[in-house]
Image (cartoon, rainbow, N blue to C red; front, side):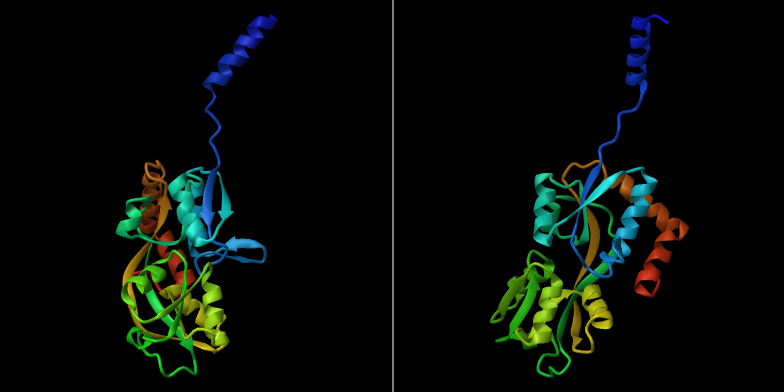
Length: 244
């Protein structure tokens, strides 16, 4: 075969071949048990397993980029991340700045206090006391909007807020209900407890930059997992009960 013909054939083959898909950048917090955390050097958790199952079914290659929660929201709005799994609560304000998948977990907010604290039994008992929240979260927003006469201390990670409660430097912490309860059961060493009602019915969803093409195939795969039982199996394995 003549050299010029070989070059032509190779060029046409390159045009016919599908373009290599770009790797997605997925923003993720360092830890938010039981949704995402590291165990034996590997990422795991309910959201990690859910995302990776959906990504595999859609042939999405990706890299994780670890950020604090407020940084994750900024990265989505500025296009520095293609998506985020971070137990992100769907709110009207956030819908104006980013796109969401269909919800995959129902949550709320819960108070945590020291086990020996009998003075705080509900949210109304916080007046005149010190409360720890996580910057940029719905607990931060709720406390800022609804709790007058409460001294707020903000942290970049929920675990920092919990340690402040255990040390007695704050009177309580307010954060997402599943994370509070999981921490109490697995890492609280009997030093902390949950009090009061589950506040602010909320839903978690995966977040994407506005106009992203990813929510539609994500939702289709999520629905397929719900239909064939894979979602319920994953949910029960991580939370010990079937989804409602």
